Amino acid sequence: MVVATSVNGEVTAFLVCFLVFIGLRISVCKAQAAAPAVYMFGDSLVDVGNNNHLPLSIAKADFPHNGIDFVDGKPTGRFSNGMNAADFLAKKMGLPTSPPYLSLIGDATLPITGVSFASGGCGVLNSTGEKFKQSISFAQQVEYFSLVNDHLVRRLGPSGAQVHLSKSLFAIVIGSNDLFAYFKTSSTVSIKYTPQQYLDLMVSTFKGLLKMLYELGARKVLVTGVGAIGCSPIQRKQNKTGGCNVGLNYWSVKYNDGLKTMLQEMKSELGMNYAYFDIYNVMVNLFQEPETYGFTEIKKACCGFGNLNADVPCIPLSSYCLNRRSHVFWDLYHPTEAVSSMFTDILYSGSQQYMIPMNVEQLLGV
Ligand SMILES: *[C@@H]1O[C@H](CO)[C@@H](O)[C@H](O)[C@H]1NC(C)=O
Ligand SMILES: *[C@@H]1O[C@H](CO)[C@@H](O)[C@H](O)[C@H]1NC(C)=O
Image 1: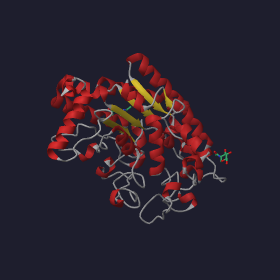
Image 2 (image 1 turned 180 degrees about the horizontal axis):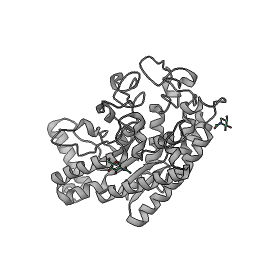
Image 3 (image 1 turned 135 degrees about the vertical axis):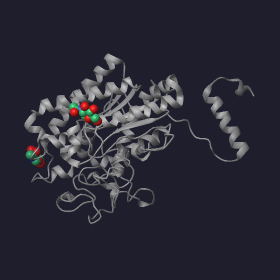
Image 4 (image 1 turned 90 degrees about the vertical axis):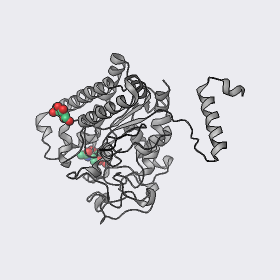
């Protein structure tokens, strides 16, 4: 019993696990999770079903052919043929996918391993989600999180909740919809603001909400930039050559620059630790050499109809491809499961080429 006298937490955990295994002859032993919880904020790229609970929303994915590669081929509200980045991230951390906040309303106890507030169609700015009639804005997501925080304080005590949150990951994937809203035809915000003013408003709003999360206990934040959204099928089909929308990509890069500067300020002003995922350049690289990553179709959506399968979204009447593993895009906006998996590999353990100043694995270790 030399091992048992060790105060090393890991060894003790292993021993307890081992004894339980012998005693009950069932495997309840799991590898230790990389963090106590993951709190997920964002849009349809990481929505795991919040919008299923918004009756008026038109940003929905709770019907076929979404989920065709999910467990039992079931549509769940994920804008994907299978899992999305929220699922892959939780899996890497050794945690279950954080369930949608709106699915938990009325439950006496919330899961201790995290909650997802992500909602398709939303943006950093409240005005962005209006196009989709109903979605949970970033500000509203933070408000919901403060209610979860109240619950944690009741359950773990103030200092227990503080320790829990300081070790947890706060993951934020948002911003594309704000840019789509500005650059669409008949945009109302483009009358009010110049592009640069609009980006500045996005960044300052983001900073304000990040500060609120910090005040509520967040210390480790993963922030994803905006991808090369000018190259999504919905944008390419509007270009006669099938090329990317150069303007939209230009302003995405500008926004990402502002976001990175803001995150550095949060680090120096408050000591908030972060990992920034340069998804834009990952996508540019993917479009340049898709074969390296095992993809052959970078332009056409898998599910949809018409030009580049992007005239009609992925609805039950749409057709879909059989070789989902070789397509970058599932529908006119969203990546396939295979691409989400590849993104998550990079953000979790990738090099500083794309993870600034560190990857998620390192962030959880600080
Ligand atoms: C955005 O919405 C939240 C409520 O979710 C509200 O508290 C906030 O004041 C709004 N922001 C602006 C700029 O209207
Ligand atoms: C359309 O794509 C071409 C590249 O194929 C690019 O040079 C051009 O700028 C694009 N048009 C717009 C409006 O972005």
